Length: 498
Image (cartoon, rainbow, N blue to C red; front, side):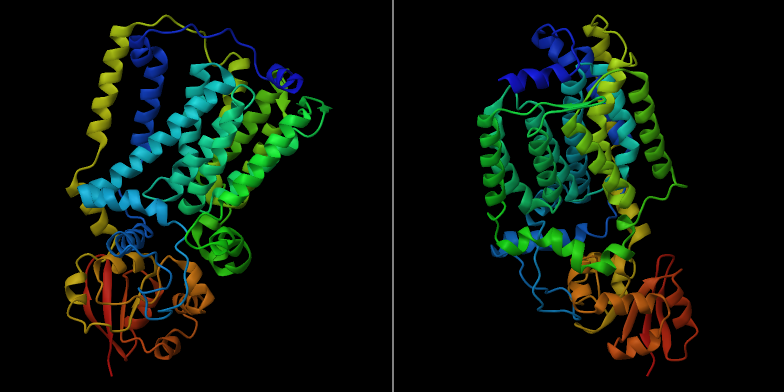
């Protein structure tokens, strides 16, 4: 109990928020800020769903729903067909599949938007619990949105971030609601079946527990050791959460998949764009530096204290974001509640103002109308697909003999898996299985014009479907052994001329 009281003293002290009537909860100023946050998310969201992974996710989900069997081997390619494969995101694929079945392309978009708005509303709540200031919480979330756009798209990763925020909300309120800690084991059981980001959540849980194991007063960083009973409870929760990870259809292999990615998939990590370090000449890289410097400036301005676990979380988030572009979203989530507290204590959140329900209702209605107007039509979404994928070329692909060996563009592999089922692919964005078989290395050599023609013969490639502006396309145009069967503004289809 003493530890709980001590930790509470580390949090900012604010007067209690008075209870609100139902109309104030729905149309009060915090609701207006939440609506503005959702509107901003929708505006920043890409009006395209041209993500290379979504198509094979749909195919996997279709296989699961129609056959009641989990995908365990590759059935989509001719290069590694039959090889063992773990569909480590199977649960995260189902919402997109059911969205597709209900509304087509718009269904994919709506599932993405619901996931994104859920993330930022949870983040808004987390930031408020930390800062006790709605203005500061909304402002901090608004700063985080451009940073998080790196993962805006129909991705299973979004559900991983939802689980992360649920975990952080449980940990933030653990001193007041200790029983809620037992929500973590079932949360991890769902998380491990949805996305490999569960490992980040588990690392943060361990950091949170370790921070509570010591008494520390180092400058502005403080921590108070928890009681023996509390530490025993946390140890039990950690062990139960670890055991819950094995409640999955693939057993230990699914649990160890994130480690497999880190240590075995070297080509994946070194060549896929989102696994590269941020480009600090680009807007997101600059924003990350501004956020880091601004955070440090606010910390110097105010004379407050930091909880040790927050410092550990921020260090993990910044290290991850500076190392891999993919984790800019993680940095946005972790930094936002701490930034909100800094903004509040620095007086940047703004004083509370009286509610005007009529004006609030008018503003919320206007923002809802703007959100509805921002939702793209099926035609707009289809146009985005046509601009990114070889849609027009499908007609000519259907003239190719079934099962023919086609070398496809990496980004189009998933699209062909979903839309050209007669033809197995050479490679797609399931990089792991192709790296294990050496196919991804051959693909990179072909792309880099390193013995490209020899490798095409090695794999007995009869047709090549590639984007117009790729170096390989130029090579084949000028090679006597290949001829153009079809060409448009997006794709070129070649046939080997024997």
